[in-house]
Image 1: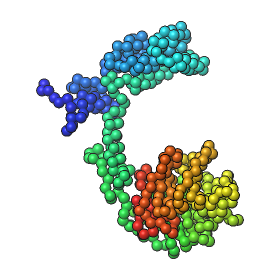
Image 2 (image 1 turned 45 degrees about the vertical axis):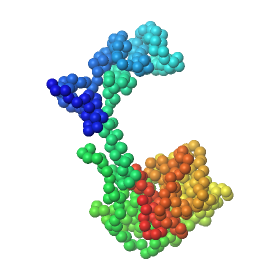
Image 3 (image 1 turned 30 degrees about the vertical axis):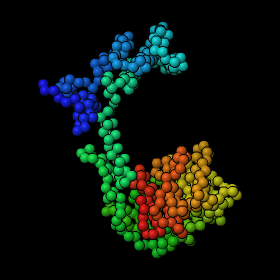
Length: 467
């Protein structure tokens, strides 16, 4: 037969034998056993070595003495890898001897064979302790089916320890392709990547500018004055808008993508500055400007409860992920921050004479952290589980904040015409800064958008929208 090249690709970077072995493994994993076997026969290569085939059969039959010999005879195996593999084999062997009552054989494994591996005493003692503890509870009760499953798990675990020339890592071809696809997505995500579609393998992936919506498709005119805030529901079926005309409107997204008015929410005496959808999208909070907070039923458009009153002026609000609790901040420092259930019962409050005016707040989607922005340029991140608190001081006044959907990052708008992106965990030394929008006298609420919150969208006082 004519000598064939040993490398593939235009740059010769792919080892042909390795490539074929990876394909064989993939065919077996997909269930194409005949095709895989045919390729093995024709290429003269196997995706797992004869040594591993032998080792696997010995483990499944419980032939521990020959199993140890097979491992010791494996070529090109580093000493530490060989020791780790034998340790796992001895562990299973030790357990099975104890299970069938052969305490003397089990003790022999522990005293004579395990020490030859030069493992730390701590690891050997831990092995003995864990299995002996298990014996008191369960050993002697393990039937053949359970022993068989434990042996299969041992084979899988050994496969992770052994080098590729003996057994390829599981799912190797899928991992390689996924790495390439991820790299292509990463290479364009800082520009226009905004698609949840499965990336095709038939061509190189690259997103164009058309992935970002830039055209007006509908103008909504039902409000009689300025619109101050809009937000889509979490499921994308509705849009809520609030206005200085003292109303909020719930719009329904129709099958053709157009919006149709569902309910006009009339009850506020002052402009409605903010809205917040419950995580399950059955309720909507509307926040009056220095007024009260109202809870609405999305389906019927009726007001279920009014929060505040008696001097409690609401400045901001947010939901907890269970859709049963809300939190709101007050523009009155003495009122602070309150957590309520949907019936208006106070669950918890953070008050104090030293607490500044609350400008905005948010709860991370995992319910772990309450993030608040204050009038003294402070941001406070309170871990609701541990009560640990981070305090971040900005140089300029904060107007709003927004949290990413994965709860890892948040953005704050500053009156210095900057947007700062920070991490919730507090590990970043400095924030990422975004400029280009104009913000002088109005509250600009920037937000995360796109797939996996990879974009930041911001309004601007110069009639432009920035992304």
